[in-house]
Structures are given as C-alpha cells and as structure tokens.
Length: 377
Image (cartoon, rainbow, N blue to C red; front, side, top):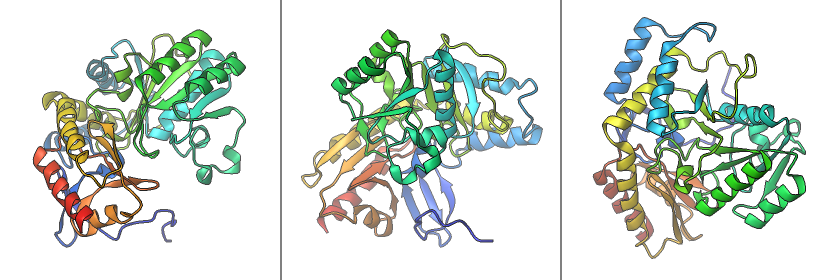
C-alpha cells in the first residue's frame, strides 16, 4: 500500500525538535516559524509537556466517556480560568473541523434553525458542515453542498444586516474567524464582531467564534475575538491546544443547555489528550506566553513594516501575514531552502508566521536578517 497522494510536500525529513528549532535527518537545523500550521504553541518537546504525557501514559492512556474522567474536569477548570470564560461549558473533541461541526450542530439544536452565515475567505475545516461554510469550492464535494449556508463578503456590515433582515428568523448561527488564517491573515475589525454580537442577540442566533488558528493566546489575548470586548456563544479551538497532540474543543455559553446524547465522541477528551492540553495551559500561565506573544509579535510587526518591498503587514501577536508583491514569488521557498526557516503561505503571495508563543526576540531577529537577504538578493 502507498500513501494517498493529496499533500504537496517539501522533501525534508524532520526527525527532532527543541523549542523553536527543528532538525532534519542530515542534522541540518531549521528555525520553525510555522509550527505545523499554528499547532506548536509552547515549543517542540517542551520538558513539562513531555513529562505530563509520559506520566499519564504510565497510568492510563484511554478509556471511554462512559466513566468519570477527572482530568477532563481539571482541564475545564484550567481552561475557564486562563481564557476568562469560567462560566462556560467544555466539550472535548479531536480536531478543529470536529469542533466547528459540533458548534454548528449545537447552535441548530439551540434555536431549531438551519441557516448559517459565513464569510468570503473563510476556512473552517474539511468535514461536512465545516467545509460547507468554508470558502473554497475546490474542497467542497457535491455531497457537502447545501442551500443552508449564506456566504457574505468579508467585513461588509450592510450585507450582514441585509441577510438578517431577509432571513432573521431562519438564521441559526454566524461563524467567523477573529483573524482569517488560510484567507491571508485578515483581521476582523472589532466593530464588525460587535455588530455580529448585536444582530445575534436581536434575532436569537448563535455567535460562533472560530479560534482554531487565531485562538489559544496566539494574538496576546486568549481568543482573538476578545479584542472586540464582546463574548461569543461558542468558541471553537484546536491546533495550539495540544502542542501537537490531536485535541479540539468547544467552549459553550451557559445559555445553551446540554442534554444526554445531543453530542458525542469516542476519542474526544481521552486521558492523554487532556494531559497534553493541561501541560500547554500550565506552561502558558507559568511563562506568561500570551504576554510574550504580544511583545515579540508586536516587535516583528513593527520591524516588518519598515521593509519598503512589503505591500502590507497584517495580524496580531504571533499571527502575522506579510503581503508581498508579485515580483517575490519564491520568498517562502528561499526562506526554507536557502536560510532554513519554515514559514507558511496564503494566496496569492502572503508569508504566514505562526511560531510557538515562546518565540524569542533573538529568533525573531534571525528571521528578519534572512528576510532582508531574500528581498535584496
């Protein structure tokens, strides 16, 4: 059997990682400013993280949600405290797509409605409902197509108001990334998030804040939506929550009441996943990583704005998009193969930076030096 060939890959075999550095099978060191799509939040092989997982594995790796799992309650308490949403409820899953699937389903249970508002440039996942609200026809199979999704232009308040005017009593939820990742690091204005909150309140719709990539402290606040000063009804999260261990979650407003059987999962919230997630939160608290993300990210953004060749710099904290003109089509490739720095990209020509939240200023400077060479070569 061979692998199903769906990933365009770089022919690099990474075999070791420490902090923000990774090493290939030939011993070459790379600076990791992408973290495997914003997944590595506290650095590769963090000692506390490794010990937490190892200790749990020696006790119990898995049992189902048919029994009491105290470590789930510990995670819920810690997440509520660190996120500032202590009165919310936690449901644990395995991935970001699954988190968004359950959020959309839960919203529909809550108000008995079917229609969802999503936005151009959005990426919410590849499973049935999640891909239906994603703005990429190439990954929407015919079976995923539905008339229940209203796709609106990004940050168009008039279009949003008109959609509610036309369909207000049919709209179950509005789902939005606080900062679009795949969409090119597009920051949702605070006023737009406030408008969503207001319209959802008026029409009894559910405000779903997709924090899969832009959440978990990456922007300097726990959820990037928090900059707007309003609360969503459901927050979805994954990627950085487990520092590489597969885990996702939804944080649910107290106004939405649970019932036996309405949601379920086999692997979600297993003992190892919860140990990984607790380790991440513990390190985030102990090392003030949200503050570090704000400070080092702010430094990077200000320095990047000084490059005359850069069209625009967008983002918050350590979620940064560098918009380059067409004459630099190989910048990402050059950073990787000439300077051994992993970054991401978004179309048409945006460099995405999504490093670990404990990125140092020295590593930021290492990137800036290489970036200068790439643009001036």
